[in-house]
Amino acid sequence: MTNIHRIAAVVLLCTSVVACQEVGECWYETEGGQGAGVGGGPIGPGAGGFGEAPPEPQSADEPLPPDCLIVPQGACFEKCLSDYEDAAAVCGKMEDETKRRACQDAAYATYKSCRGTCQNVYNACKDKCDEKATEAHKLCEAMKDGPGKAKCRQVAEEQRANCYRDCEKK
Image (cartoon, rainbow, N blue to C red; front, side, top):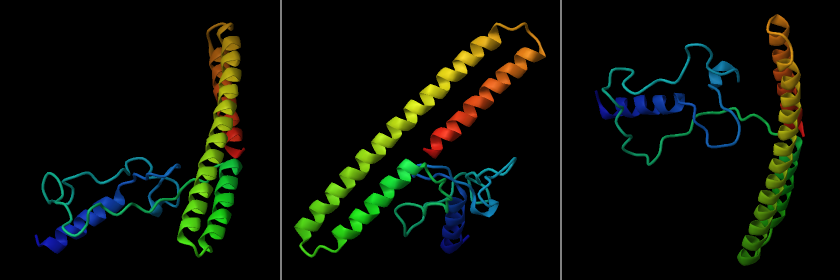
C-alpha cells in the first residue's frame, strides 16, 4: 500500500472518531445529529486491512478533529459568549497592540468568570433536582413492593430528567 493510501486511510479513520474537546456532545455528521445509533460506533484500529494500528500521517502533527454538532448551552452561557464576542470585536479594532492585548485579556477573563457563574447556577439547580428526586424516592420506598413502587421510581426519575432539562435552559 502506498503512503498516500495510508494517509488517506488514517484521515478517514480520524474523521470518523467522535472525540470533541469542546463542551457539548458530538455525533457523526451523517446521522443528522442523532448519534451513531445501535451498532454504529467509531472504526477501530486495524479496520480496512492495514495492520494492528494505522500508521501516523507523515505531514501532520495531530489528526484533524471530526465534524461535530455542538449542543447549544443554556441562555446564561450563550449570553457570556455573546458579550465576549462583542468585547473581542471592540478589542480587535484597537491599533495599539499592547492595549489590544490587554483588552482581549480582560474580555477573556470576564468571559471565564461569567461562565463560572453560569456553571455554579447550573450546579445549584441540579442539586435542587436531586434533592426533589431523593424526597420522591423516599415516598416510593414507603410503598409495598410491586408495580406501583416501580412506577413511582420511574416517575421520580422522569421528574429529575425534566428538572435537569429545565436547568440547562437557564
